[in-house]
Length: 365
Image (spheres, helix red, strand yellow):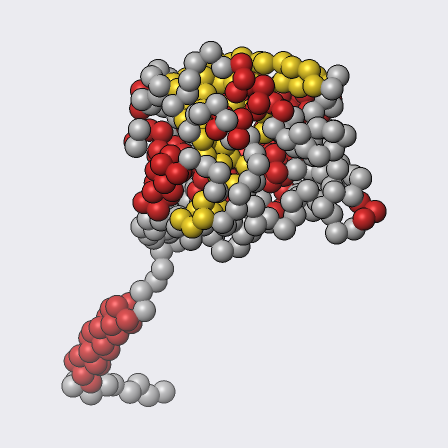
């Protein structure tokens, strides 16, 4: 048998080749690791921190609503709502809490319209009429006014005037009737002319303005003793032998002091408001009030032009020589009809009249 031997130069070549291959492998390994790093087994993802957007503070809606459109109708639509209808008193309380403590708010006043209407028609001598008087007394006392009830009889029917007083100085009376007419004698439908009316504007609107004034008038800003007078038995005139303004006349004839002036608010809540200068009113006092309305920008609604001559609750005071003004919108197509309902009344109309009187009493006297 025979044995082969390797050339002497081959082993060094093989060793050198192995070293080169080893170096090439190491370089290739590190290059691959750099380009494709292996993810770690334990990863903690930290959510990205984003800044929260700045949220502006919520503001209450303005105390006035659109001057060109009437408010939506109230939740109840019965033409003659009863006292069992869900009362808006709670809504009025909440609205009062949100409203400014020192500025007349038409939306709060409108809740007083709804609260009266919820009692149903309110003629003198009826249960609903008496309940309305009780509500007025409670609202006045809640607002810190001294109250007095002045009862009277007329043709065997018991009526009641209610007077709230606050402040010191010469007496100013602001008045409104709270009774409603027991016949819709101007209704275009003869079949309805014997029905009692809701009196949302003719009755409830004036009361609503006075009750909101009771809330906002500040004694330390008043230079007068203010009487808020709520008259009963105004709106039965020419029915069953009754005259108009029985309650107002009773108060005027029982006065033991002489007021500096009397301002009556009647039918002032019409969504299509047009209050002209009333011709029986005392011109000097009337012009002062209308000047305040003009200063507040209300001339398109409280219009400085003479138009109507009205028999209303200011007449008994004029007859005693007391300056008196009737603020009344007599261009109201639903007067003494079954359509005198709460949807015809607008908060902005109530606010224009109320704000005018508030400024006049607190800043112009």
